[in-house]
Length: 632
Image (tube, rainbow, N blue to C red; front, side, top):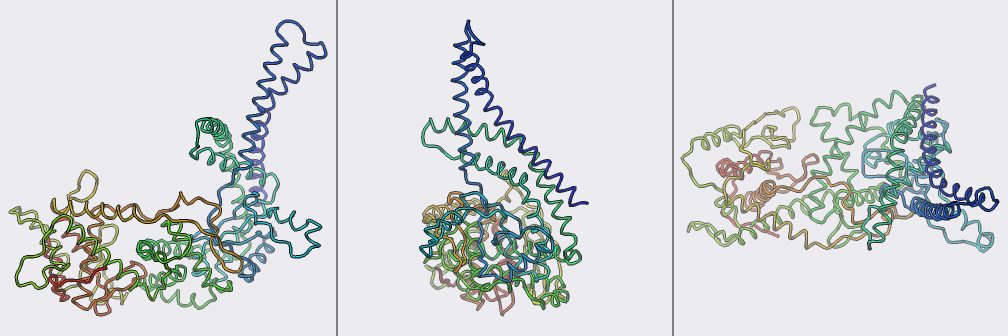
């Protein structure tokens, strides 16, 4: 009963959309109909005398102009290419088990199977209509003379498949088990049933055509005449789109309700468990992109196994949150990525597409855009990032005319040292007691034993013992709340004018480097033999489509660069090593244990000009700030 109710609601809304299309056509034909009546009446003698002949010709000219404008608008709507989500197409030969699972699911739901399967680097799944001629596959070459003589191959190759394409989030394939994936895809595949109805399909094509036409009219035109014409077309298409908006939204709700009701009979109990995995996969994927992949993309490297990294990140998250026992039994089942013949190549293609979408990287690997394995990540990404940022920091200090320490007991005074940075950022001594009390409070919060708090995004801290990050059972959370002076822009006030000048210099230097970077270019898509993203349906000027983070402020840039300099000094003088934390990204390892108490001490130096907490941390680890470090 629920399936019929949802389907009937969707069909009624689809008919409402089609009625709007019919009314628009009637409005366009009305002047022509009036002109025909006047001309026929005049020729038969029923309408004669007075101004009727002149009126007939005026109406005829108006009708011709209206028909011409309507034909132009219809041509723009018909030829405009609807938006298509960037995906990695999966040929049936490269994933026969996955296609078999989807077809069996469609048979159980009694709906048409999807025409194809594609992957997207996101934690979502949907059906996408690609029936527009521009989205159809190119005509294949004729393999024999008989097929070419009959013309069958050329005629059918240009006809797009009627069924929609099933788009699956690539993290689902690696994190979910086969049964969980089938349960998650059940309501999605069930949507092919309502989509096959002619009225719903026609209404969707009309709305998608209007949306594509609006995008065409929004593009910058070359001349004033073209701008004027496109402005008129855009006004009409926007008016029609606004008229259809409510009905189209209700139609899609009806389709979703009918699909969800139909999928109730398929693995209902398992779907409840699978939905929990959907939320967990989304959290792990977002964390992996923002904390792990983004630093690599900024260095011209793209992790080639992002989906495999999701499994490692979520496994680490479950271990820290004391969920390891429940997940251990679950991970023993068959993963959904086993449904692919070559999961490694598919993961690599999805990882490249993720870098393209979220960072705007090049479409193809090259000398300045090379893949990196997780084993090489600490050396290729973490070490190079820290040394590059430390070198940028010292270049800005040189540009500002900052001198090296003048202490005659310090050797190699001309090299890049951490002491130079600490001396420059240290605020001049003042007699204000408030600053001293604030510094004392923060030092008490950090502790003097070398174990302190790890700053997170909310400004609170997570305190750990000496085995931080290695034993979830000993993890302790500590809240540190310190009121900070905030400027007019909402950013905390920096320690001194010299600190603010250094932050501004870093922002300008980074902007110059980004402006000097070569422009990215799109490349060919993947094939059935070699899976790869399809770049032909979207514009490079829109990249990145989904930026992960807003541009860093001057305070954040300065804190990151000072942290990088501290890490370089720790690696070169105290035997520390770069590492990878699956949830937090680049990490400094001291004796194999992650140092989690560096961030708040750096912020104290940057914001308050107080170097004492950081100096205590350096003395505890045996770091020598006066020693030069190796830079890129």
